[in-house]
Length: 252
Image (cartoon, rainbow, N blue to C red; front, side):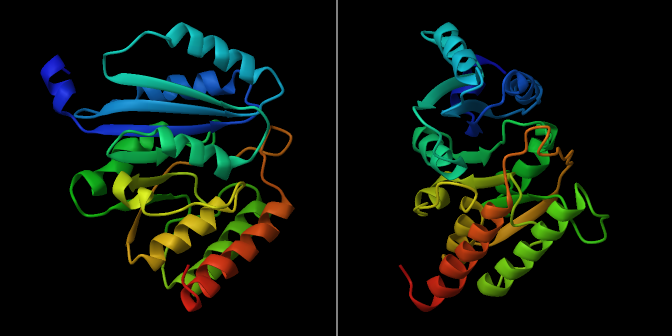
């Protein structure tokens, strides 16, 4: 990309919440930077959410090396929470720093493939959508991941659709892409994984259509570092009721 093309290209802000992903975040970042995105500048926003396994120190070293560097197709922003506050809180911090016309959520683990970015961005770039979700479970697909997680995801998505009137297949997906003006109109309250049903319900309440596109998915176990647990599932149920059902009856 020439300097002139870089200056006129839209920017994609990739917001990556990071918690206890020692070294894993490095591989993820390498995958993100290697994706070919012709016609896009990139801003990568890394938010360390109070990691205590050495990840924070690695990110501080990375930020120190990047300080003072600018230009090119990728800009970096590295932010830190002094204590662990949860994915939703990390995303709020990252969204506030995002400067791109389009914002995508990227988990710091290796379950999701950044190679899917082009297909996720196409509906927005072509003007067909303002919000795109990457679905792990498109119609006709086989179950993916651990059975318990799969069943929970399907149940939560079904209940979310019931309260919002949407017909999506994967409400809990990490890969959510927003035009920034749509995202800025949504006030996120949840600090942990309740972000997923909350943002979905509030987008639906605003009348914004969510377009889905199939993505790759390589699940990992709790032993391998997966953070979400049964308490998050219970909270997700409450968020579905609070933002989907009650939110339609008693708008904020």
